[in-house]
Length: 431
Length: 186
Image (cartoon, helix red, strand yellow):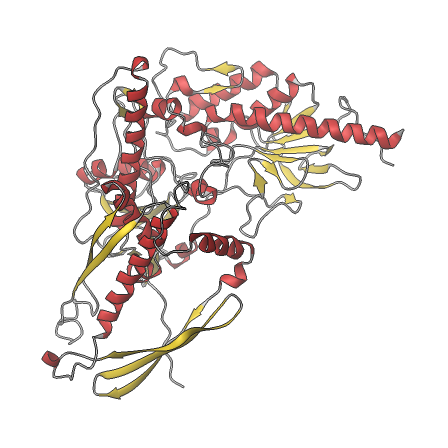
């Protein structure tokens, strides 16, 4: 017979829920739990919004406009709803939220281990304390920027960076740069590093092309309005693939301009296929560039068709510019298939190849053979364990700041009922 | 997306393919295949390759029959032209892989195909294999595939079919990306 953990206890070291990570996701869950009188603590390895403080390049802006920056019970209320927050502004936004909701955050507390406790629930060990809890919510984001294994074949004279380490072009030496990956990050870095005297090559695999504005509105407004962002994980054909799709090629600037491969070509960026090998000091690129660009163009056309159709059906609500289609992505007749890194004077390779979470501290059987969490829309296969903020976790918007509210509501309800059933069962077995 | 699949018949058993995909997701070791060919020299540039067995789903497998392919060089190279050239077999592989992929993807997307024709052309500068110019590669300097497709679908949907087929094609991957090749003598 085990004694139940009381639902509310002031006893340090024992709570119902431990939330790992005090970013927007962990804080939103904290607010939900507080509103439902569920005792919890938020453990944060660094400071609130830590990765926004320390792991972002200087010029970064959110891909979503300010008006879309909202968290449960809080939204942007500044003077520039159509602007795009810098990393420091995001820090301010999340910091204010933490204060507003009175989140029980323990900063400077790094979780070293989460394991099953002997008598049910979890034992959480940090570098300064240890906790017993019934539930754990993993809201620690995706901190790892794994460098592809082919990086080991690069000549030693070449510096490699991930977007976590990159700050600005001035910090790079004068030599050329190879940016690997055509996500928003890859395109933004390629653009800001390319300038007269410094050549950037951009290796392009699968990517998502989007105009910043369409028919008078920000593309994010359309994605929100027509329901793309609300599409659920259990309604798409291939969720594994959908979760791997890179971020759309967008840029947040006051002139609201579109950043795509055609724009980079005009600025002189050398656009090449996906990086597939490094051999004898030569980078080798896939011959699939044409197809990757064609797929992105087709997907863009399908998205714009959906928007046009929506406007046709619902003309009253929007009256914007005429339907528009964009020039196909230009691909050279014979794009280069290799680049001699030393002869082309490449000094830096930047891996804009995506982030993934690090679960080295998670000692419960919840990982698949690729080291990713086995979960159903954030409900992890181990009862009592939840996660938040992953790409397309429950909805297409799950990894965005504004996407957390619906997920926190769904998972919070699940968690609360899980706790109730746990308490009920232990009371029953106690009587 | 699959709602109309029952009415569409391209001769592809998509349910079986999807079931196999799920089965191999759950048992990745069964997904490990080995493809094999044996090639015997006949005479001059003429050779004959035979293929029958392969390994997959954790066991030895065989084709329904042994298949045999003659390769040679044409008479303009002073050969006897007993078969198409080896490089042309690469074109056969690419075109047939993409075409099979189009049928499968079309079935899955509920698109009825009426005709699919691929025309493939690959350029080659013989100065490479003849050792005339070290800067010229031996292989193709480019491959162009043109599809003529008659199907119950819009132009964009057909383009998407062709794009997805490339994305999932083994031979497209083999020709567009490097592969380690080990050649030994025993």
